Image (cartoon, rainbow, N blue to C red; front, side, top):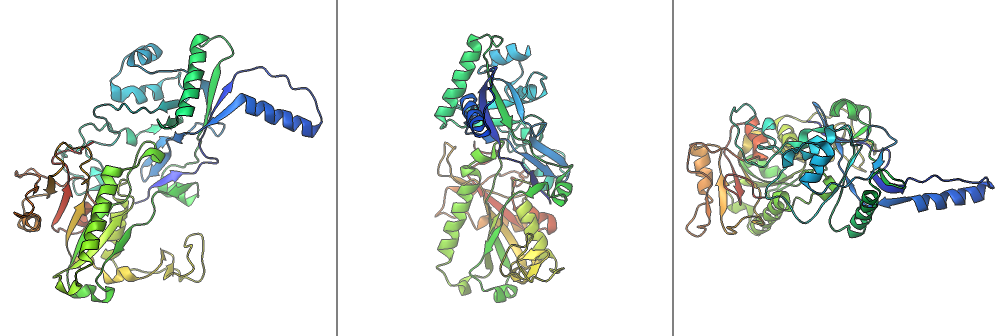
Length: 438
């Protein structure tokens, strides 16, 4: 799976300017440059902001970009209420349609979003069943609605730049509000008016494969991590249980998406499990324990799918490593193409994976009941029931089954990558029962 983000000739830029008629007198070159610099500094104010980025996958592109490398410019127009939006566009959409309405309006060159501490009771730009089309549920007609507030806005392309200003950038927000107030006083028609210029043009081409080949894009994500206290030479002697957590998420404005509940809580939980089990001798385990932290899971389970592919087939090195290159930037490596630092994965086989356990949202940061954990399985098969029973104990009464019906399915999970390759038991532990906690 290829996921890429478009290159930017320059970092996303938001600046304010006054629409003034300036007369520049002829002067010696150095003096003229100094005057131009002074005029520029007096005219423009560069502001801190977070742009919505353009992303590509195998099917096309989503996200935001300026229509040209010269950026987008327009008079600042303030919209803070639904009534103001209705007046601007002459119709009142539902809340989740506001972005689409502004995007499709011929009146809008760009959007600046001033984020406040007041959030809607429920809103998500992800799908109702995130990543289900990449999972073992892709052919299921009635997919589970894990994210009822999902609007699928992530999936849509925006041919206008969209920048966000977080609430802690008080100086920037104050300056923008002051500029809007000045334009309001002038009725948006009388000069001088304050305009904004948003530069977020991103080179892109067709889809991820084409864009990466032309070097107009960069791959999304970093590295997945796996580890075990079992020596690699002993892996073939016993079956393996994979303990998993995701390390990355996605947000409309990537620079502002901390993903604390969705990813970090599971990561911290898995690190705590690894720390506890590392104090026991591996000889006491009936199976190997493999700790995995998958990157890029928010984008079609990219990390876990690559890991499953790597342990499902014998690795073939096409180009032997001789020196560091752009495609393999290491001082030492086992192979240059595909780039691989070592061959440790050869000791791990998908056929020896006995089960997968994922720690999902477990932070309880947005749930009323901050003590209960739910164990999800995909069905009531004997293998899944046996794996789930490991978590149920009188000593842990607050760990319960997520569903007592036959209708349960796994929530979006890295385990899906394993299940698609080979039918095996899997559970997901979370702080939600039937829908994501927001």
